[in-house]
Image 1 (cartoon, helix red, strand yellow):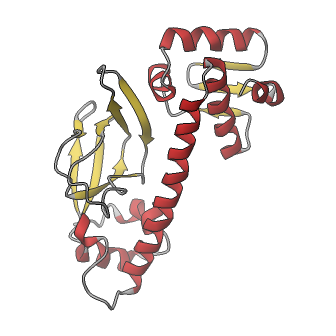
Image 2 (cartoon, one colour):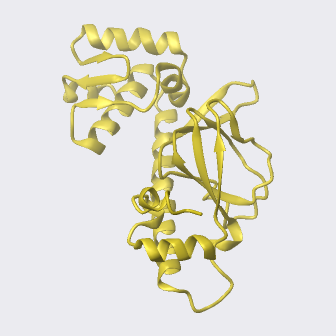
Amino acid sequence: MFDELIPILLKTPLFEGLDPKELNSLLTCVSASTLAYRKSEMIAFTGDVFREVGMVVRGEAIVSKENTAGERLVMTYLKQGDLFGEMLAFTSKKHYISTVEAKTDCLVLYIPKEKIVPNCFSLCRCHRVMIQNYLKILSEKSLLLSQKIEYLRIRSIRGKIAAFLLDQYEKTGNRSLELPFNRNEMAEFLNISRPSMSREMGLLKREEVIDFHKNSFRILDPARLKAFI
C-alpha cells in the first residue's frame, strides 16, 4: 500500500532512523492512511473534530487562523514532511484550533491520534524511534511558536521584516534566501498589511540593506538590518 511512498517517508523527520522494512511494519501498526487534496482545497477547518495527526507527503499547505474581525493570520507554512495537529494529540482538545489549506496539490498521510503511543507496554524499536522523533518535532514546533510571538511583539513594520529575514538567514547561514511565502502570505504571517510591507521593503532596498526579486531575497547589510529590531 505504501511501497511507492516509503523512499519519501524515510526522509521525513518523523520516520528518521528507520529502515524500509521497519517503516512498512510501523505504518501498518499505526493504521496509517493517505488522502489527496487539490490546490486551495481545505484539509481541515477550525472546529472540525480532531481524530488524526497529518503529515504533508507531497505538496505544500498553509496553517492559518481568523481573528474576531475575520482577518486571516498565517501561523505557519507546511512542506513535505511537516506535521499538523501534532500538538493536539495529547491535549484535551477535541477540535482543530486552526485551518489547514492546500497551497498546491497535496498528499497527506494520517495517523490516528490514539496510535501515536500504543496501549501496550513493550514498544517495538520502530515505534520507540517514531515517538522520540515526535517529541523532537514537538519541541522544535514550540520554539517556532515562540518565534512567531516575537514577530507579533515587534511594533514597527520594518522591525518585523528585519526579524523575519534575519531568522531565515540564521537558519541557512546564507544571505541569499528563497522564502516559502508569496508577498500576501508573508504579510499575513507577520500580521501587517501587504501595501505597508511592500512600501517598507522598497525603502530597505533603496537604502541598500536588502535586495529582492519576487520570493528571492539577499541581505546586503545584516548589521543594519539587526539594528531595526
